[in-house]
Image (tube, rainbow, N blue to C red; front, side, top):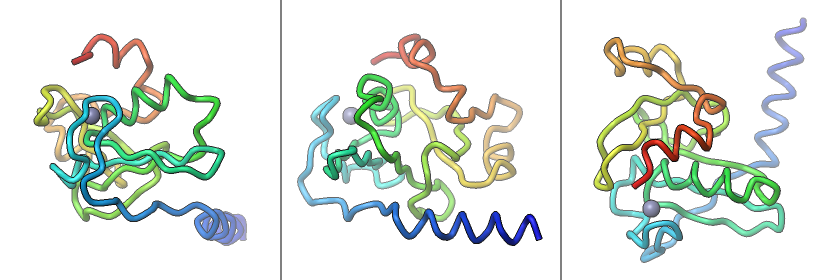
Length: 138
Ligand SMILES: [Zn+2]
């Protein structure tokens, strides 16, 4: 019963939060790269005023999130396995090398993240603090 109610609430919240289509030629506000350069890294943030901001790397979406926290409503990243948009605040992250150097891959399932990490750390959204981002800043 409890589980059914949870599923209902979860589905309900999805109806109100939606990722937007990524515009062609859009540039990452953090590094200036084309946000479609590496589709697994393409991320987006929905602001409370309804605007969307698109990023070329998950890492840069995280940086933006922490710098503009009061204005952010939603964070969307791509599941590295399916390529589908997932809620970035509920995803699991594994460190990887991107075109910008150090970065993250996102996974919807903890199992998939653990198997990809091969013994390395699996991060939740909460683990990725401003301090951690700064340590790896590029
Ligand atoms: Zn960037």
